[in-house]
Length: 214
Ligand SMILES: O=C(CO)[C@H](O)[C@H](O)COP(=O)(O)O
Image (cartoon, rainbow, N blue to C red):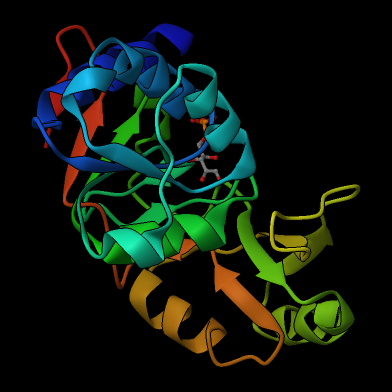
């Protein structure tokens, strides 16, 4: 699994062109990407980061981390996923960085998703769906999710970079990711749903030997 993450991350470097500002996701697969990016740091114009953790990792290599409000749209965003289906729809948020990750995916022309082969699934939902919620709405949101058949569990001891809580929703068979993302987005108190269907990945790199790109 670890080797799969590294292989996917190394391949993603081929998509980074000279002078680009690179959107950078969060997680252990992205950590390999940051290590690889450090080797070509003088060729890029900087990065925009999706989390405090990735920012610290980037800065440890002396890579510039810029403000999205200053950069405008990004050419490329590189991030991992917890699950990826054949439509390149994703579940993300295992690292609790889903809100900023969704913002960067939306801001980017090309979203390259890097996964080890275990993340590829026919139907999303085996991995519990992360949802970032405003703390005072935790119970309200949990009740709404129970009504649609989900089993929401608070991720204990986790506060997101935005000061919010995470509910991990078990037991959903996500046959229509787009519809579920849209309907969950209507519930007051939900900040971000970890379903990336409205804005899926454009390219998936699966860390096989050699890497599969689809
Ligand atoms: O969405 C994420 C963080 O919020 C990550 O991309 C996802 O959890 C995959 O992580 P890893 O690369 O460690 O398996």
